[in-house]
Length: 279
Image (cartoon, rainbow, N blue to C red; front, side, top):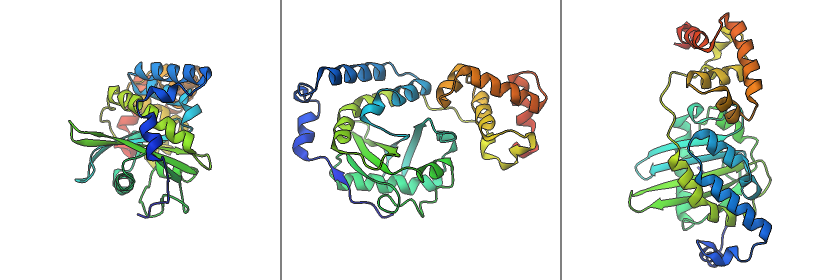
């Protein structure tokens, strides 16, 4: 996979801001207060919905993005696990195509190592990360077509002997050096927050991944909501994950119940699980 020319944070600046309070002393009071709120909210993250709310909040002021992809493990041995956080419809960990994602992650990891394990920003598409040929046949791959820039950084776990890679994708045309600096500051808190979030449990094939789900006449959004219902999420949790109100989730569920000819969530899940097209 061809990799782009990247903007690299100069070593002197990286050394200056890496856990150095001298950097914070150069910030205005407003920036200091914002960073303080961001860090406090990051420390409070305990579940996926918390992580999504945090990344879609004031973090966006310093790290503007629509998608965050995290990967960890032994990249040399291709033993890699991954997670994705995004408010975009359908762009979820459970929807990712592992076969297509693996070469992309290995290429990004190699790129990061070649740059001295420093944060780097680049374009997405023909002028940057070449997504063509990566084999991504999933909602994440489709969403990347609308992204214009990316930022890559990671943490090496010397005790666990594995690396953690973080990539954010943005629709902005360019991520500048201030974004690189922010990533250097916030990465430890991002890493800590992700480690606190339990991975989603294994579950049957997603309804939204089955073309025949149209047997019930459910829309793409309704399919996605039912996927989260099957994972035991409440209306409030689903609303937070999808960035819609719990009232909107309730309205969607009422339409779903009508289409499935059922009266509650349990009956809806049971009917979907029994569907031949979903087995």
